[in-house]
Length: 347
Ligand code: IPM
Ligand code: MG
Image 1 (tube, rainbow, N blue to C red):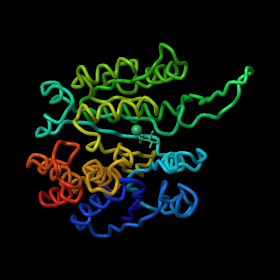
Image 2: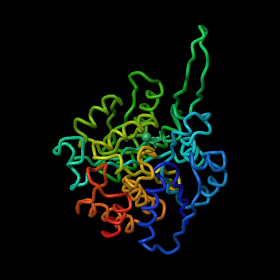
Image 3: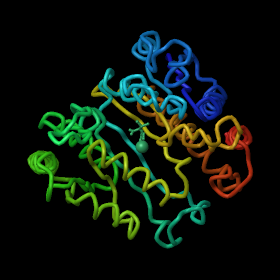
Image 4: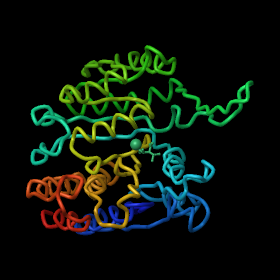
């Protein structure tokens, strides 16, 4: 079982190191890591954020464990050379279209949520975010209007095949959970969303055991704060899913807790925390490694067929949190490595 390890920028190396320690502690026979450069780190070393060598390692791996990309020193580069293009390029090149972002409150952490405890304690939801289309991948550019004003543009589009495959992911995820699927769109304004909604409704006939509802994205943002307990599975497009998953993370308590899986149709996947590279705290040992450790657990479950080992990691994280382990984002003072130690001790 070959794991491509792509630490990336900012806090990426610190947090992936802890996830790797946890995986190694499980002593899984045949598990090997192949590390590669990605993001700003790759650009600075070899001139491209997603070098061919890295893409090859990712392609031949059974799963990819990804840290984060983003580096302020690279913000002035041409867009195709910026660190973020590495993760977007991997998602596209490997057809990782189905992004699973679970959010649930840990009993010991209700106090860390930005919401009142009685509201926060009910959070147990999954955001299924489309990852290969939408305004992220449409034609984009800068141009000049007839009056000489600068104009930026990004085309938003979805075709029905793209919607259908992510809708299937959403329905299946709902079947495996509490049987409720909420499709989030902006069909009152966008044609892209109207097609999205039509296709989701068509597909729902194949899933009579799933209760389907629809919500406009602005209302969904409001409802996630007002009563997040009403949601089971949310299925949505690339841009709306990006925004709502950051929002959901603060309902849970910290963006340092949310893991994700990005899967292709065969179940091959890239696993990464939903947060970014946090350059303001990079290299200081302050970052919370739990989102990455929990991403490693998802990797064992979804790509490597090791659900028991995944459970062990998740239980160890829960035990560490129940035991009071807190990094700064959770109001504590543990370092990144000390949080890793707490999980290893519980393991
Ligand atoms: C995420 C991130 C990425 C995204 C960035 C780093 C390109 O915010 O995974 O949520 O927008 O998808
Ligand atoms: Mg994001």
